[in-house]
Length: 171
Image (cartoon, rainbow, N blue to C red):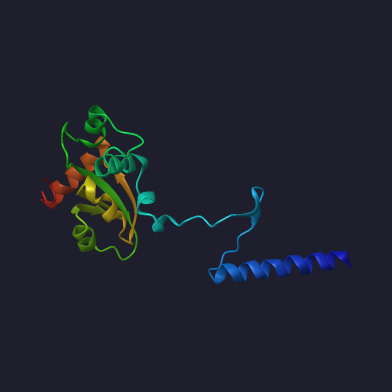
């Protein structure tokens, strides 16, 4: 009889948790840190624009938009080698690849400050002022931002531009 009782209790708990999750009411549970501490659900990646950026782009954004408040600052040499930013450039532009989802609208990203160069599948290559990175990341259909640093990426873009006969978006 105890096996059936255990099965019923387990089934009841599963139904309660499934109902809470489906109702978007994720329960919190007490932790080992005390009776008042609870485990909160993790933020979804789409909720935080900074979380959509690679660490390098996060550091770059903070360095140029919050001078003196950055925990880590890239040297002039690192800025040049990683992003092609010249020494002393106060409002630099960077080339990035956006990972995008369904319903992507290039005009919304352009309104945020980016210039679309080209797209390949679910990646859109843009040039954007560093100060506009967070605005671009706020777009709902943009799921990730990463710098175009690979020589291979640049060669691919050059080939796409050549085939399409375009210099669009270059500054």
